[in-house]
Image (cartoon, rainbow, N blue to C red; front, side):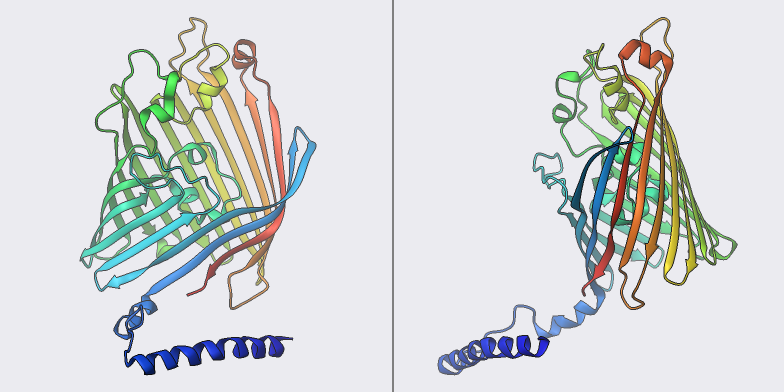
Length: 392
């Protein structure tokens, strides 16, 4: 069958190629290729990747089956590489996200990454464009196709923002420092909050975020860290402080990750608290905080089989509650994701997986009595394929 297809292919293309050659001879004109031969050597430093995750997903709410569908959960097209000895570029577009052109950075929100990096010295780099915020710990740094479900902060954060970054690595390259100045959001202030803007809160002329990150490497590479502090100017007199402590331990067949994250927000950017209180309050919540933990373990039980377990929780607080009898604690959410991965091929990175995403919301007694919210669970059982397909 393959031989027949090949013969048909040749028979179809041969007249076309012959016609093209004839045209060149008759016109006595040699048209240069789109990519000059002198530039073809650049392709050896360029990667083209289709980051893909597709699955048969089965959804449950409070243990009741809701529906079962085939889904293309992730499709992110990525091109990256060197275009000069000292210039690196990276572009990634997500086709499984609505392309919203109404953004403050003038680029669709479906574009995750689009930036240039310049090597100023062997230890110093400067990047400019739309980049990933360097605050997320290892959950955010992981390839998105490897994360079946995010914890609260990274799920509701805008993690890809336009701006500039300056990074410096010490001589041993075991410690790296990264400083970023970014837009604090992709949406306009009005688009994000609309009629829910609290009285007295107005848009700032400088909606920017400053990020400082330190990445460390210890014990011969067995322990790695990524710690950061970020300060966001979300509105006039409404800012956000974000601390993230990411830890990674790897030894032979075991890899462990632990992220601790804390976000204190003068104006609720995640909107989790806002959605809890909306039955009684028309405006976005003020003075809220989120505290969360994310743990992931990966263990290779056989050369082609990996076991994974992800545990996560988030605690949401409304410190600015005007109720005299208030309880600032409103919600604790939990998540557990057991996963089995099977890699059948040794020469290409394709994994078949089975995973279950179980999440539970536990509301405080105060939240239930005052805002009418109720505890609940959700589940997602998936059988699928994870494939960061490197095609070039």
